[in-house]
Structure formats: structure tokens, C-alpha cells
Picture 1 (cartoon, rainbow, N blue to C red):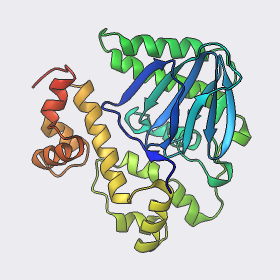
Picture 2 (picture 1 turned 60 degrees about the vertical axis):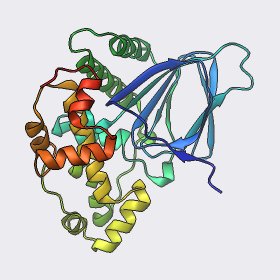
Picture 3 (picture 1 turned 90 degrees about the vertical axis):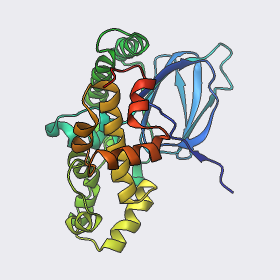
Picture 4 (picture 1 turned 60 degrees about the horizontal axis):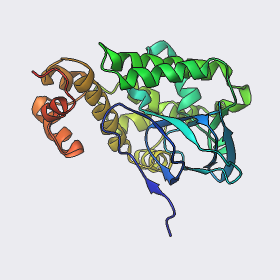
Length: 283
């Protein structure tokens, strides 16, 4: 019997809110999720490990990591916490830093499969408050400000991480190459990517690569490439005035028509409808 569910319901690159209802059943998703406790305490269950989070604590869930959030039975006061959900692929990370950030916040090896918890860090409250404020505002370039705030938060967390909390590089050349394949897909998503060539880069047969990829990430490599392209396209739709031809070219689609068809299949609406729905500049 399946006791958990896959949840991936974000309608924009970021989903940020505060809640006083700490009842989130066991689930997983392809995006990253951060919880910051502003009042009371909650119990987090992640990969069969239970952790209590108190006011001032922050928790980071890796993409595809199974987790739940419930009320702390011992907490007699009200509970409130901020939730920051985002796709790290849409943060426009400079190539020089992609590997470092992926090592901290994407790669999570089975032997250390747990969320990351930070207790009462000094700089975190002000950064989270700024992210929430910008997200709720309609000020000029507020989405860019949110993106900058999330990057600032990740940099702060990365600097606080203990060596034992960071993924350990595998020594085998084949596994090391496979371990960084997400980075390659992310940085080359606008290129023509063939699964066979990606498998060869990892010194694997096509069938073995396909099997291992699905086991690790819950979907096929081809589906993952499409997912990354769609999220990058959505980010450009919502946060720029580029036309569809440019977006299609920049995100790896054959042409504008192909992009429109795939986007409608993914979101149920056309790219133009997406842009209009979110009150972005029309074209």
C-alpha cells in the first residue's frame, strides 16, 4: 500500500507563504522546500527520521525527498512557519558556482539521506522576512528580488553547513560522472541532449543509465530534461518580456510551435495564456 504521494503543484517558479496549519502528509516533489519556524514547534519526518523544529529553526528538504510535517504533540501554543518552495534550476546560478550549490542542495546520497536543519542562525530571520516581503509586494522587479533573496539564503546555509552534512563525492569515476549529470543537463538544457550520449558520458550502457536514472530521480532522463526546459521557459514567461520564439530557442525546443504544444500539454494552457494569467507584460 502506498502511504505517500507525489506533489508538484507550483504554478510559478516560486511558491512562498506562511501557514499556521502544520499538517502536511507524507509526500515528495521535484522542487526544493524550506521551512522556517516563526512560532511554536513542529515535528518533521524525513526518510524515517523524526526531528523537532522550534521557533527560529530552519529545515531544507532536497528535491524528491520523502517528508511530512505535523504538529509537535508537546507544543501548547500556536504554530506558524514560512514555506519557501522553488526550483533551483530557475535561479540562474552562474556556471562557476553550479557544482558547489548542487553539491549542497541537490545531490543527496542514500547513506546520508536526511533533510538539513539549522538551529537559530543569526542572519536567517532577516533574509526570510525580506523574501516574504518581496514576494507579497508588487514592486518593480519583485520576482528578481525574490530570486536574489533565495540565492542569498542558500549561500548563507551553505556557509553554515558542517562537512558531515555535505554530500561525499563518490570515488569511482563512473559514479562520479553520473553523480554530476544533473549539472550537465541544467547547463546544457538549451542544447540538443540525447540520452544515449549522456549515458556514454557516464560510461554506462543506455539501458543501465536509464534504469539508474529513474531509480534515483523518479522519472526518465528524457522526462527530466523536458521538466527542466519547461521550468526555465516558465521562468522566462513570467519574469521577462521575451517573445515566444526567443524563449523556445533559449530553452531547447525545436521551434515556437513545438514549444507551444509541449507547454500546453504540461500546463493545460498556452504560453500566452500563462503570461496573461500572471499579469506579466503581454506581447
